Image (tube, rainbow, N blue to C red; front, side, top):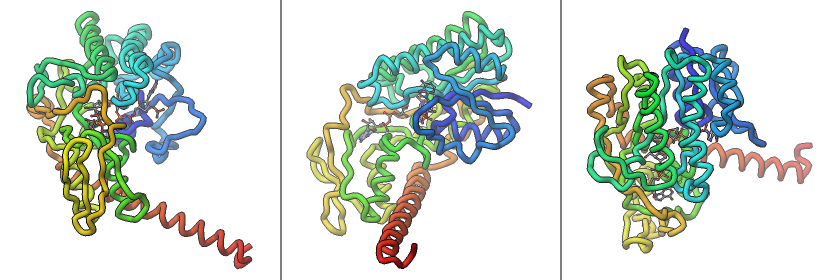
Length: 362
Ligand code: NAP
Ligand code: GDD
């Protein structure tokens, strides 16, 4: 039985990767952080599994990493932990650098200090944000980097330090340069999930309007569940190499929005430009989407489009397993169900309060 250690196991990718590796018969260990509210929604269903284990560690704390790596002695490490929100990295640049840049170094050193350099394979969660102010479309493994946020600059250090440890110490460590991947488990402040949740709430009368930033920004959006398979494939490869993981298809935020609302039963038309652009309900004329400068970034990456040819050819990975339409549909369906359950809960609470007040129930 192989042993894997996943940092960032409570995140979107960590939860899918855990399921995937357990399915492959791995003993899965993950690092969690102490927080005043124990928020482990994405992995709650895995707790209690005999091959699923959690350990406290923080990428900002080398001691904790040394301890967990020394104890678990993993065959494979998936370093997914990060301050992963690009906009937040402008507000917390130093923390982002500590976790997303130096944190990678701490993982590599922990492996070396524990005497596992020759046996432990390491996957580093790199990102299409490295291409930033893009110099070429579509982007592949040879496209020059031009990071365009504190997050991307920190991740660039992570990319290079992985390459350095590979060349200097012969370690099997690789970066997956992943383009945006989404799911029903995506954090609610990333644009896709923000849109699908708002579309579900608006369709069910629980929200009036959605405020977004740059509607013309383009992304190559894939399904997170498909992408974690590739992380594993990268570590099963004969040689340690870096790979671009993407669908090869590009859409704007506006297109995502229009489709999500359509699946929630609302046909939108967009009118106006820049901050004055609005998404209008074709049936009622109501303005449901507006632009707010609060969601503009000091520097924004606007043209990400990946070329997954190398991963297709060398790893046998299928980049089009889940189409863009299927992705939007499954996210909207999940949020429609989530909002319906919340509404039902509210109704039960309201009725119960009324029955208690009237003495119908005691
Ligand atoms: P996510 O949902 O934000 O999860 C991030 C994980 O990192 C969480 O488990 C979080 O723990 C943990 N974490 C944050 N700071 C930490 C610290 N100081 N020490 C230990 N753990 C820490 O992100 P994701 O979407 O799953 O992405 C996974 C990785 O892939 C990230 O490195 C991200 O930058 C990278 N990436 C993501 C995408 C994408 O489109 N999703 C694309 C390219 C690259 P808490 O739950 O305690 O906060
Ligand atoms: N979050 C957010 N909120 N983004 C918005 C909004 C909004 O209201 N309105 C427009 N956008 C635009 C952003 O300006 C950006 O151009 C695009 O939508 C995507 O933003 P996010 O969904 O926040 O993702 P991201 O591309 O910045 O970062 C994600 O993907 C990277 C891979 O390219 C994260 O998962 C990163 O961790 C990951 O590395």
